[in-house]
Length: 567
Image (cartoon, rainbow, N blue to C red; front, side, top):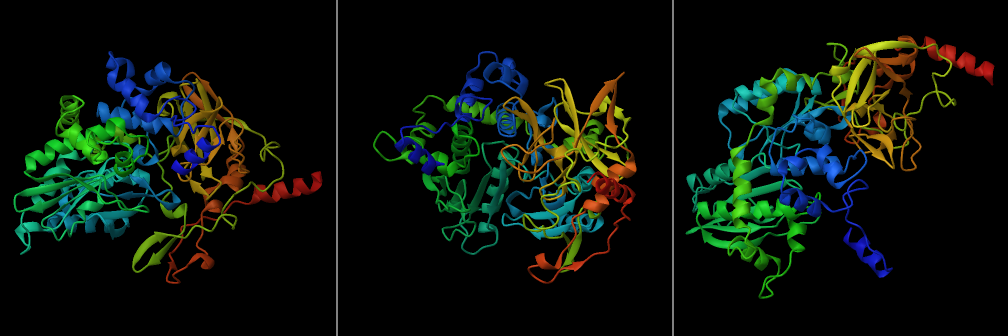
C-alpha cells in the first residue's frame, strides 16, 4: 500500500485512505468522530453511524471496522443488538472458519499454564466431537473440525473445565506467552508466568484494529521472544523492561524499549495507555508495528518511540486520563463471549444449522475427510480451475430452472430470520441461503454453496451493497455476488442461482422447483468436495468412510433430454 501510494503521488495523484465507498474517511477519522461526539447515544450502532457519517448499506469492509470500533469504545456483547450483522465470519461464529466451512476452537490458556485436569478435558472434548488437535505457536491448543451447530455444546463442555474464549477469531489480544521464569528456571529473575497470567487476564477480550500478541520473559535469555510481539516484557533484577511495537510474520519487526526496570503496576499503567492510544488512532487492520512507525518524532528527534514516551509517560497531549478511563472501562466490562452464548437460549439458537428444521447435515456430508497420522482433516482443495472448483450449473441456459414448474414453499416465519444477515434453510438435501436485508426492506434467496470452492458458507457472508446493488461477500475468500441476479461482482465469471422470496402474514415463502429437481443441481451429496489422489502432497492421507447419499439424477437425465431436443 505504501509503495502504491508513493507511485500514485509521483503521478500527481493521491491514494485515498477512506474506509470504503460508504464512509469517505479513514478509520482514524471516523474513530475520532465517535470518540468526540457530544451525544454518544447518537453513534452507538451501525445504522446511526451510517446515517450520520456515511451512506448506502455498508459492506464487508466498513461493517467489521465499525463493529470493532463500537466494541473498543463500549464493549457490549457483539452478538446482541444487531451487532452480529457487523461481524466478519469468525467473530459472528465466535470461531475461526476453516477449509470446508468447519470451525476451530481455541480456549484461552493465560501464560500458557494448564492444569492436568484441563489437559484431560481438552482430550476428552476432542475425542467426543472428532476434532483434530494441535498445539499452536502461542502456547495454546487448537481443536479443528467442528460444525457450527456443535460449537455451543463444545464450549459448554470446555466451560465446565474452566476454559474461556481465547478470542482467536477476533481482532483482539490473542495470548501472552511466557517462559517458566524464576518459579522453575535457575536463570529466572522474575516470576514471568504469574505476570503473564495477570497481563493476559487484564487485556483479554479487548478489541483492537488488528490482533495483538504479547510475551513475558523471565530473564535476558528471552525464551518467550517478547521483542517479537506487539508488546513484551523482559525481566531484570529490578523489575521489567517494557518493549512495544514488534511483530513476527512476513515482515518481522523488533519491538522498541519504552521503559526500563519498572515494576508490574507501572508496566500495566503504561500498557493501558499504549494500547488505548493504538486503538484510538490506528488505521483499519493496522498492527502496532506499522502504526508505531508512522507516529511523529519526539521533540528531540528521537523518533516515534520518543513520541510515545512523551504521550504515555509525560502526558504531553493531555490525554492520559482519557486513555486510563477508557481502558478501565474495557477491563471492568469484560465478558466471556462463549459463556454468554452457552447460558442464553436466544444466543445459542443463532448457531442452529437450519432455520426450518432441527435436522443437521454433518461435516463429512459436505466435504471428504481423510486420516492423517491418526486424526481427521478435510480433503485438500483442488487448485483453482481444477474439477470441484469454479462450479457452474450443468446448462448453458442462464436460469437452469427456467423451465421448471415452481411453487411457493413456506420456509419459516419472519421472526426466525435475523435482520441484515443470512440464514440457512434445508430443502430436500439442498442448502439455501435466505437474506433478510432489513436495512432495505428486501429479501433474497440463493444457493448456500459458493461456486469458487464448493463450500456451503454463503449465508455466513456479510450483506452490503456495491454502487447501490445489494451483495453478499463469501466468508472464505470474499468473492462477491449480487443478490438480485447472482452474478459475481468485480468482473468475475462465477454465478450463483437465486430464487424469489415473498412474505405473507408473517411467513416467508421461497419460489422453488420440486425438491428432486433442486437436489439434482444443488444437493450436497453431488457437490461434496471429494479427496483426490493428485492433491495429496504428503502421500499419507487415507480416505475415511463416507456418508455420501445416492444422488438423485432423474432431473439431470430429463434436463439432458430436453436440452438435446431444444438444440
